[in-house]
Length: 403
Image 1 (cartoon, rainbow, N blue to C red):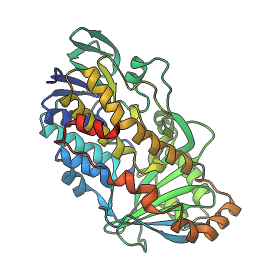
Image 2 (cartoon, helix red, strand yellow):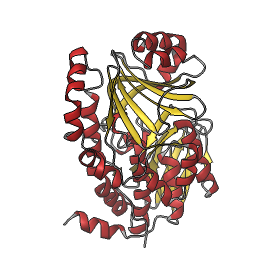
Image 3 (cartoon, rainbow, N blue to C red):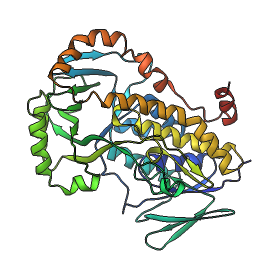
Image 4 (cartoon, one colour):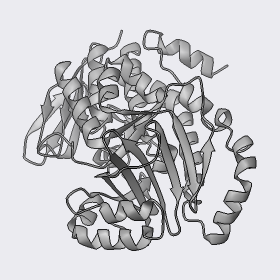
């Protein structure tokens, strides 16, 4: 019988609302504390949720709400120097769900509120006090909150990670800045297809929305690091000039860059990848989502892994008597999976800025690569077929892992 009855969730992006809702489903009271002044629905641009992530959302009855705001993507193409290759997919799996990050944040927030989860804004965590029967969070405005446990869902710059382990590594910079936009453009592309493009100077991706609109995302190489705040402090016209210079020679990337304006440009700033985090928890504190595992955007799994971990953490807290036992089980369930996906994505990052010779070589080898190293069963099968059995005891799942 679990002794955990209440939780403080720090962070209201993706993992925070999901873990709070899943905890409610497990019979544990949860409150979300967000540093922003309101729901964080203006952060980032588009992303794709994999089938495993959407299946995890179905457990908390949020899957259909997300599908309603998403575009199903059943097919993928790779464009190298203007030449397109059709990529193989897992035919027996549901499509990806392409969604605006801000809309996803808003949908998960609203679903959590409907489930009874309270949200508290302007609450920037500064320190915690642990005591025999719980933990007290102290916020920058002088307020406090107390519960049995505290969950850090506060992203790659996690305060909670530093409280658990002051020597914990921070996120690594991929050498790329993220930008995106939704714009009016008539594109000759099936509605359910996403294109990953290696342009003359940089990588980008895009997909078609309804009614003559396109979403595109740019991974702009940059030796200089810009955080989200720093990148957004730079005038949009500066970034637009660089984007147009970088992607100008590409089709259709150049047209996307030229049609992107200061009004519709989404600036994400530095793209990160988290190295392995030595300590996922300590006593009554634990990490979830990007605070503990943030594979690069090349993985196509970042948001889905955060959702999975949030649901699995709630299961473990339901099934184990003490927080320490639950946290240890949660790490055993998740560490190998998330670190394996992060390692795969790190390899892809190195190929995002191929030169002219490398692009020619990619085009020449692509037919063979599609049949061998890009075999979807080998590269994505285990990742996308992963499903969480909410009703099964976690102990049974752990027993299988140890065989």
